[in-house]
Image (cartoon, rainbow, N blue to C red; front, top):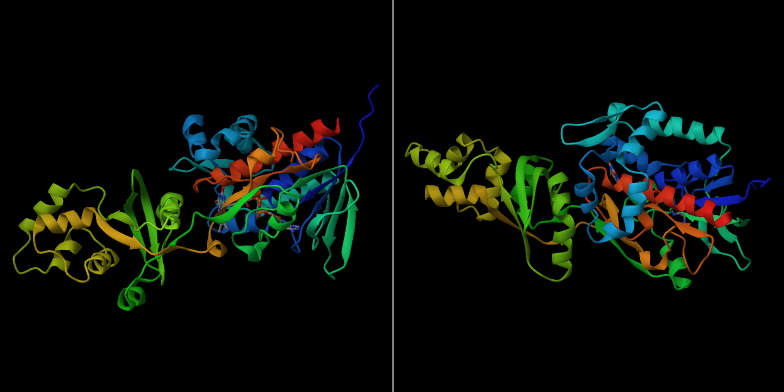
Length: 406
Ligand SMILES: Cc1cc2nc3c(=O)[nH]c(=O)nc-3n(C[C@H](O)[C@H](O)[C@H](O)COP(=O)(O)OP(=O)(O)OC[C@H]3O[C@@H](n4cnc5c(N)ncnc54)[C@H](O)[C@@H]3O)c2cc1C
């Protein structure tokens, strides 16, 4: 009879990727310890839950996989093995019945991450997963299977594991844990890591003081933003320094890449996507002669912030001609200055190069070490694609560990 062995396995990073890997490994009988640098696990997951935890998306597989752009081929096997339906079943298994919102996005009951994480940790406790918090991974030791950590007192702690899953996240919102400090120890081993860059972030705009003072914190509701051949409908938020929000995030990778190439980048804003330019021009033409342009715009359903934006992009010189005014409402060109920094981005682009990994997500140069989640080199828009790829790659990595140890 083949005896199964409870190998000591270290999972480094207690985010959704690390916890999912721990669940798979502990379910298979491994002796799992999760090491986490913060005082508790899952802090970014809880942060994500504040705006409504969008677990995954219900769109057809082909459209779903296309969201990963160039990383699609590297992620397909993981997402096919543990896809949106599996993730919803897993969520239901934790007592958080998921539901599909009107946009096709999938959320746990009540939109919240807290009850989900609570029952998940109870499940991991029952499986015997040990959590060692305030342990910051420093890199590998000299002996095979040796990992180096700093504990809360700053003392070095050495740990032996038969296999390791690194799930250290990206570098956005570092105050909830992931700071990208893992890049140096990996590069020191000769492992290629694409530079960490902001993804799903806002952009700086050179607002006038008057506009920023009046409209910072005001949403631009139901607009269409376009850039090159891309177009996204949704809301955007005016901030003191620029623009952010769902519709902006949808274009953010292409906008960021354009700015990084040193190109002038302008996003085209359609402030009335439900009205055609002819219809708008007709309304403006029929407006009473004595009405100001601002009144005409408000009568056409534009909120004060939208009118303010048109004044801003025309340097307060709104065209008098109805056709020109209608054209401006449908396609106001807003020049962007720079992407927001990684600190406030929703996610991170860049990470461990897939060429460094085998199909089980094991680092070829470090047999027995696997990588999962946002620290891998992929990016995707918001909509549940981030957590789906995080969970799916975690399961691939954990199954890879089991395969390798066997
Ligand atoms: C505001 C916000 C809202 C979001 N909303 C959504 C959403 O609704 N839907 C969605 O799909 N995605 C969302 N995301 C993205 C999603 O939260 C991440 O993609 C996901 O958390 C990545 O999981 P991960 O486990 O790979 O990394 P993380 O969640 O970042 O976890 C990594 C863990 O590793 C720990 N760690 C890092 N370095 C070390 C070290 N050296 N030693 C020990 N531990 C370390 C960190 O403290 C952290 O706990 C949101 C993100 C933000 C910031």
